[in-house]
Length: 106
Ligand SMILES: [Zn+2]
Image (cartoon, rainbow, N blue to C red; front, side, top):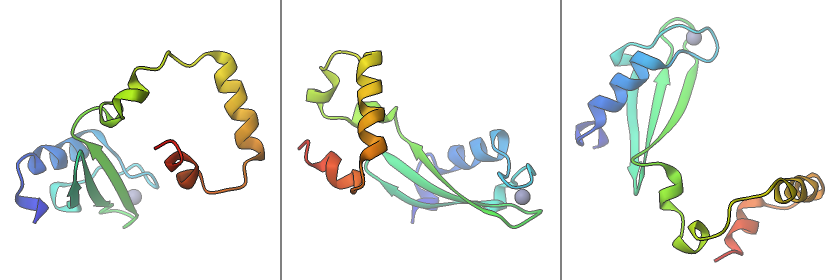
């Protein structure tokens, strides 16, 4: 199970050291954080606040997520301000499934 994989202890230590409950800002203890999954390139963690019992789901990446992108995407020029404005206009009117839209890029 993911709890025994290398790196698990470091991830839990990071959460207890640097993250606070979203709801009440209480600190997490080691026993409040669990690794719930590990897939190619990322980890899933669950933290339960010891004070208010709010559940927080956390995704941690093995490396910066942009490194997982297809090399064709990485080779593109940087986005311009006009690109961002055009996407903002498009997304304001878009009423579909964004995941489906992004899969059309394959
Ligand atoms: Zn809390």
